[in-house]
Structure formats: structure tokens, C-alpha cells
Amino acid sequence: MASFDRFRPRRRKGDFDPFASIEELPGYVRIEPRYRAGSLAALLDRLSLSLQNEIVLQHKLDLARAELIEAQWDLHEAVISIKRAVVEQYGIDSPEAAALGIEPGWDSELEEDDDNQPEA
Image 1: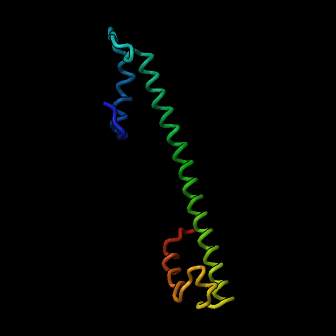
Image 2: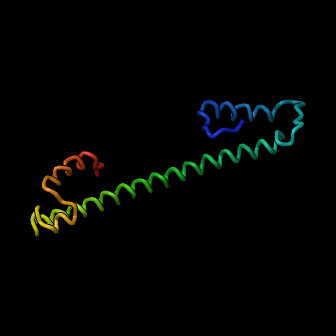
């Protein structure tokens, strides 16, 4: 029965191990075409290729995730820098600061952000 759950390695090994033994059974006749030797080998090849593809795609996902995290922090740091410059130039109570959503005490949130920033 097909499902969307991954097999645990032990269960997968339980399918790999008998595969070689099935090929060596004397007199075993496979009636269903999908269970014949060539078909089983094709299924094993498909599984192996799928596992390799998953490793490659997981690596690409990890790289994309790292890029996303770096990009979000770069943008965040740029916005904070701009806000600091606006406060220094126009003052915390200025309309320019208000236009950027800056209110007194806005920089106290930065300490919380520092706790969430990944280590370099």
C-alpha cells in the first residue's frame, strides 16, 4: 500500500537484503511480470536514484535556505541603518522618522533581534 511516509532505514534495509536472496532461489518462478528479476532490479535502481536525487535536492534546499537567511538579515540590517541615520539627521520625533514607523524606544527591539541572528 502506497503512502507518503518515508520508510525508516531498517525497513528499507529489510527490502534490500532479501532482494539478493530472491535472485538465488532455485526454481522460483515469478508469475507477475512486475516481480520478475528485471523488474525488481529496475525498482531497486529507481529507489537508489531517488535517494541520490533527494540528497542533491536537500543540499540545494539547505543552500537556498542559507541564502534566504543571509538575505533577510542583510535587508534588516540595511533598514536599521537607514532608521538610525534618519533619527540622527531629523530626530526621533520628526515627521520623517514617523514616516518610517520610528517611535521613541524603537531601537530596544534591536536587542531582541541580536538574539535571533545566526552566528557568522
